[in-house]
Image (cartoon, rainbow, N blue to C red; front, side):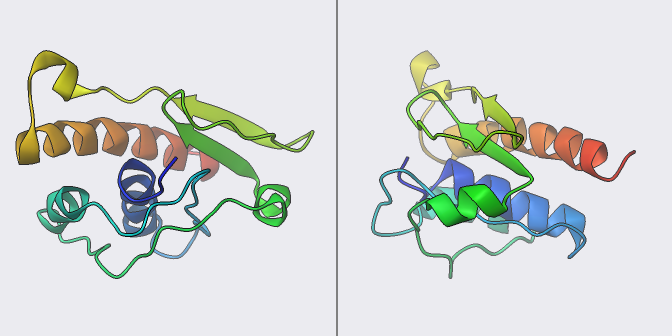
Length: 126
C-alpha cells in the first residue's frame, strides 16, 4: 500500500540475502511520503540499511518486467500480467494482540524474513 514499511522491509531482506543475484524492486499502490522509522530500525538491528529508500508507486511497466510479484497484506490490489507468478503474503499483525512499537516491528520483520528466505530458496532452486 504505502510502500514505506513492510514491503520495503521485504525488499531490504531479499537484497541482503540475494547479494545481487536477484533484482529486487519495491513499490506500493498508495505510496506514502517516507520510510517507516521503526521498519528501518528493525532492519538496522540486522545490519540492513533501508533508511535512504523512498516510497514508490507500482507501475504497469514494473509489473510486466517482474518474474514474481509479491503483495503484503490484503489491502494492496494489483493486476498481475498473465504468466507472471504472484504471491500474497498475509503478514502477522502483532498490534491485533496489543503488541506495539519496535517489539511489533521485530515480529513483523521476522515473519517477513522467513517468507523472504523461502522465496529466495525457490528462486535459486535450493
